[in-house]
Length: 275
Ligand SMILES: N[C@@H](CCC(=O)N[C@@H](CS)C(=O)NCC(=O)O)C(=O)O
Image (cartoon, rainbow, N blue to C red; front, side, top):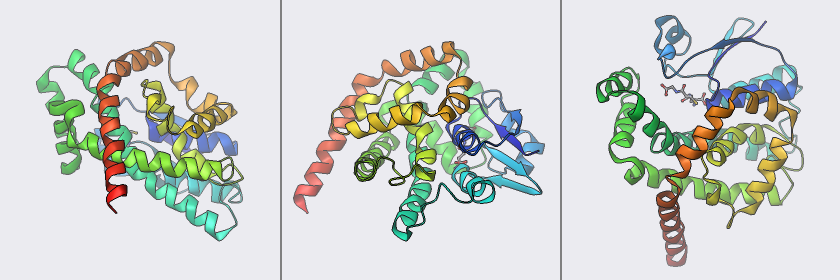
C-alpha cells in the first residue's frame, strides 16, 4: 500500500490527494503537523530533505514535489489519461506543472503575509516564531519568511506574488476559454495542479482578485468543486472552524491587498502600453 505523508490544509498535499481521488487510489495516511514542526523530524527529513510535505512512498520509490507526484500517479495508474495526447496541449500542461512552483510561492506569500502571520503572532512568542523559521533548511525561504513577518503585505515578495498571479489568471482564463478546462477540452493535470492554490485564495476571502477581471476563474473553480475529488481531498480535511478562521483572518487584509492588486494591474498596463 502506498503511503502519503501530508498535511490537512497544505495546498501541495491537497494537490496529491486530488490526484489520488481522481484516479481512485487508496493510500495509507501519515499526517504531519507543520505548526508543531513534524516536518523537521530527522526520519522525515531523510525522505524529504527540504522538510516539506507531501512525500509519497509507492513501491520502492520515495516521491517528492506535488506536481511530479500527480504526473507519476497519472502515468503509472491512469494510462496518462490526464495528460493530453496533442503535443501542443501536452506542452501547455507540462508548462503549468512547472509554473505551479511559482504559483505555490505566491500562495505561500499571501498566506504568510496575512492569515498565517496573524495566527502565529497570536499564538507564539517572537522567539518561538524565530526558532521555527531557523529550522527551515533553505536560507532563501528562511529570509522570505522573516521578511513576511516583518513587512506583511508591504513586502516585495507580495509585489512579486501579485505580478505572478496576474499572469496566471490571464493565462488560465485564456486556456479555460479555449476548452473548458485549463488542461484543454478534457480535464487534466493542469486542473489538478492548480485547484488547491485558487481554492486557498478563495478561502482567504481573496476572490476579488479575479471576480471582475477574470470571471472564468470562478466558473472553473465551481466546476472543480463539483467534482468528488474536491470533497474528499480538500473540503473534508478542513474543519468548519478552520474554514471560518481562514475566511475571517484573510478578509481583514483584503482592503490593503485590493489596493496592491490595483497597483499591480496598473503597472502591468503601463508596461504593456510602453512596449
Ligand atoms: N514544491 C513543493 C513545495 C512543498 C511545500 O512547500 N510544502 C509546504 C506545505 S504546502 C510545507 O511543507 N511547508 C513546510 C513549512 O512551512 O515548514 C511541492 O509542490 O511539493
